Amino acid sequence: MLRPAGLWRLCRLSWAARVPAENLGRRDVTSGVSPRGSTSPRTLNIFDRDLKRKQKNWAAQQPEPTKFDYLKEEVGSRIADRVYDIPRNFPLALDLGCGRGYIAQYLNKETIGKFFQADIAENALKNSLETEIPTVSVLADEEFLPFRENTFDLVVSSLSLHWVNDLPRALEQIHYILKPDGVFIGAMFGGDTLYELRCSLQLAETEREGGFSPHISPFTAVNDLGHLLGRAGFNTLTVDTDEIQVNYPGMFELMEDLQGMGESNCSWNRKALLHRDTMLAAAAVYREMYRNEDGSVPATYQIYYMIGWKYHESQARPAERGSATVSFGELGKINNLMPQGNKSQ
Image (cartoon, rainbow, N blue to C red; front, side, top):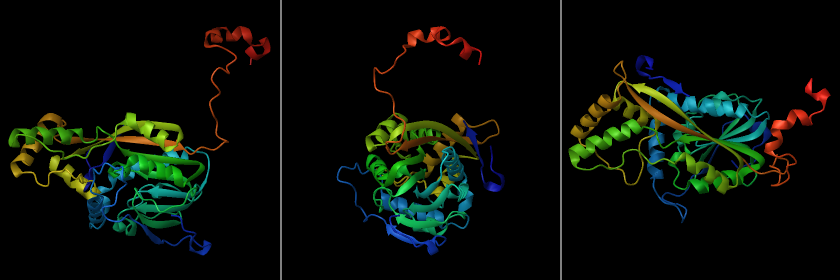
């Protein structure tokens, strides 16, 4: 499905500071960004977080940032849908890696009392989208959260955690800042994201340069998410996957949009330069292998959605093993066990 006037539309394939009450409608900014180059001692340092900050700041400063917001707005709306599925209000919520506020715009003040929006890029916070919810902007790194324990009723995150070096620690921090019976709802790119672009670049670079280097950042496997959430302390987990496919005129338009989204590769082992003939060959391979009947080329974005709750004794828990009074083998005789009056109801 093509976007009009150069904007390609998508289609679906399936802080912690006390703020005075009189300032609830004011947008404040506080900082929690980590020192440059700092990481957890146990972290496998895959991504250049300083470069990612620069990429996101650059994208947010473009004359028409909304031109590239289509994917993040779509996923933000789906996160908002999952928030609405929970029949309760959230007095204090946090959007982690909020960008320009792609989730807040779809939520209302009846559901969210006050919204903290945290991101590593200050320009994204300065140019955030309008929302009816009172908000506070926090300049903070997802890997080093400046919030106290048991602060938020809800934490959401959309298309941000895939750039975190230490995802287990990030999830542990999210669990730490949630109140008991608080919920985390997140979305991140999955392992099959942009497989068409990855394959085309690898084939072209191998043929032209005798080998290839990674041009698409590594992603978490869906099988690992449940384990990571459980290890972080979450329970009553839900993990599901979805795909969004966007059609582009060609490979170069796709790469332009990725840059406009602030989603360019920032892996430390990335290759800084690709030769012109290799890029042209990759575009030809992409078109030959994946083009649609109308001449456009598809790009697949796999999205992992995750929901996890912080334990509270009021939550429902499974019965103890061996406490059942009826075996599965007797379920076929259920009609015989029921009183005659109940059968007719």
